[in-house]
Length: 292
Image (cartoon, rainbow, N blue to C red):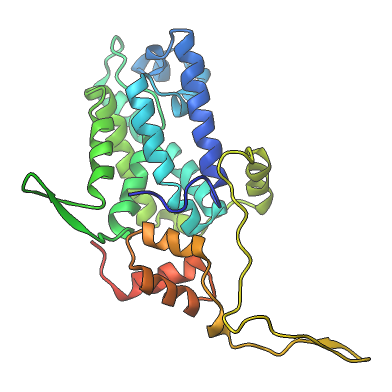
């Protein structure tokens, strides 16, 4: 399953984060310093290393972790399309900070100054994203492989499990901390779900993003009634009004809802009812069906 229309259309923050993660991983990998990016007890409570705190948020410690991590980050861009870039930026910041605090508590409890206990990479964001993935993305199809039953969400879970166990204990702990951070966001602690960054921050990521990386212009809204002629008088120019229900859903919005597990015909009807507002259309689905 994918995360909606291909590319990073309407997901500039996710794109910037993925580019930064890939850049730092390759940069430190070329220097042979990837394994040393993981946090330890000494990095936090001994000689505080600010550069490790920052780089450990982005850079993975190995190529397999990079592949599975970027795949999951690419898929989870669907949440930015769902809640908007302003709120998704808050979700990223909250997930990273909250998971880091959980990791600090874990390091304080373990108190092993010799071990490099935590692997590096955006584990907090990735595994925090599994919480809304579990609750808000419905299962649309089931199938069997060698007698084993799978859903359209199974491959995302398998990729997450592979990443969680990629470095065993060093990756298991950051993954659990990420799930806890996502649970706090889900519980709306401190009303965090209402918070959002100012528009200029989203505009910055939009300008920062490379136009060649999959952004396709959104098709203009077309009218089912066809081209309505305009009538010009000396006083004013007017166009006969058309009922809001006649607005045709955008194909990119339909594809996004279908990728989230909703039926195509139902997605079109919800978009018509919501006037092509994908967030409102998603809320229509979530209000009338139980979470899985």
